[in-house]
Image (tube, rainbow, N blue to C red; front, side, top):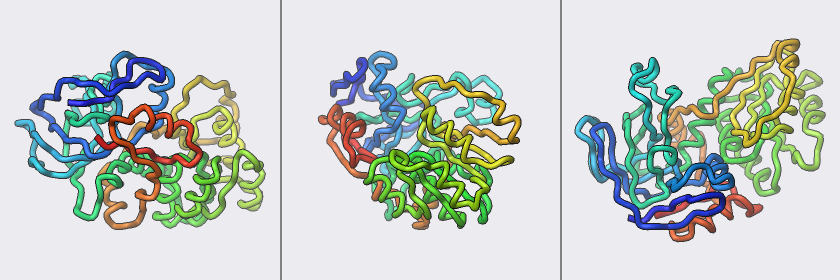
Length: 337
């Protein structure tokens, strides 16, 4: 079969590789669409590992089912989060392999979905995998994973309707977070980001105030919009030192910060601001609620379909990555094997 193989920094090519074999605990899926995630971009820029097949934001059709898998059949349309835990630690024994410190994910020990077929181990329906209803397209389904990350992170913050919530970063997860917050009935959602096209999408997603972080003083605007109080919650999705510093300056004493974005480089900061201001700093970017995200899509409480801005065939994988990296109007780029 054909698959996109990452050999090093900015070096990805489509090659013939062996087709995946079904294991007892998983399924083989014919991939119909796969989105380029920020973590894929990190690996692409840095050349992380050798001969990786990346891609985990995918949807497709089940073509083989392992003997220990129940509730799914050949022909089912699905999306799933895939990886494998060690099988021995406390979390794996509880069936929560995503908390395993030795887990392997798509592209990092498990073959990814930038390929014609992919094997999904630990296929647990309605936990780590969901079926697609007829109303959900493959393209929209490929955005379920980032929506599920946004949903998990937002719910972990336990927002209240009267909260003032700031989302930093207008990538897909940030835009999804805005939609989730509005679906929950949060009164004021402020987004700070960059790129004109993404800021317009933030308005469409329901943001009450949209800040151009490249041109405006986001911290001052947040304090003005909250009558000098500051944000109750900041959801930091940008993954940069500047964004992290802003989140500390935007949130009020006793507030909460969700760190969702992935950081390519270590940052320097003084934890005294957390201690002295009684701020809760919470991580959430590598956990998700896949069934909850699909429910939001099916009930039309969110719409992630319009976040897909570009589509490429697998043969143009390098162009797809460069588009996601550099095109001003790119939000979510899909690859369709």
